[in-house]
Image (cartoon, rainbow, N blue to C red):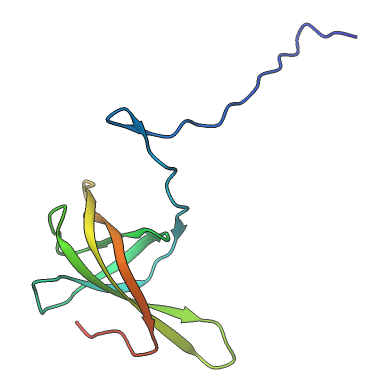
Length: 128
């Protein structure tokens, strides 16, 4: 029996973004994570406190009081709490660069940083 009120539509996957006529690979999955962190330009010695907003295998979005221009090489440090029988934490030390800046009225600007290298350590995070 045919129902003329039923419409079947095939849903196509979203196409990859195009840049200069070339398809870009899909973005890495992001995870909403709010953690204190520290960051600085590679050329500086003083750390700036910030907060992560989301993180993926390729980078993170974070906010802080100081904004660096796109392309600035950064060092990032954040401590990941681990669930175990005793309180543990691992510090992630990263090198990367500012990939984008998101400015929103009434809130701290957010910077997107692309990871270039990272390592885990059981040392405490560097103090600001």
